[in-house]
Length: 78
Image 1 (cartoon, rainbow, N blue to C red):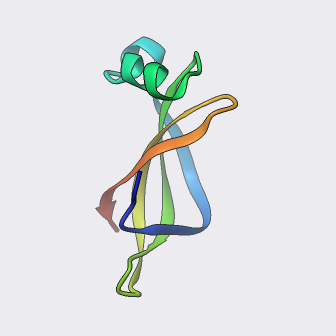
Image 2: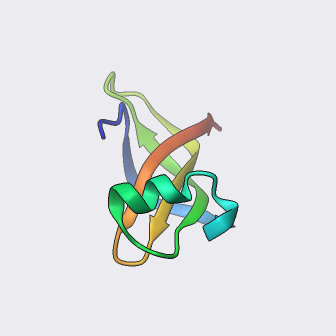
Image 3: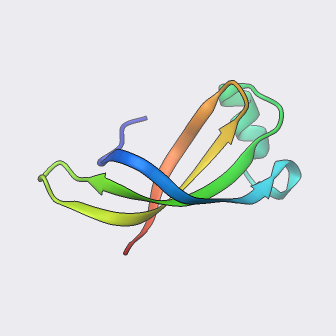
């Protein structure tokens, strides 16, 4: 998956938004990446865009044990 941004530094204020059946894309995530217990999470991190600009942003992603972060997206620039 190609992203049009890069996350640099640590992500802070990490919260779990949903777990397993609460995630609409759960079956798609399991089919594409494997894993059993998927979580949708959010946090605050610094992102850099291809034009060189960097901003603090709210970031959302899915993760499972042993799989890591998948489908990372920026929800809003802070």
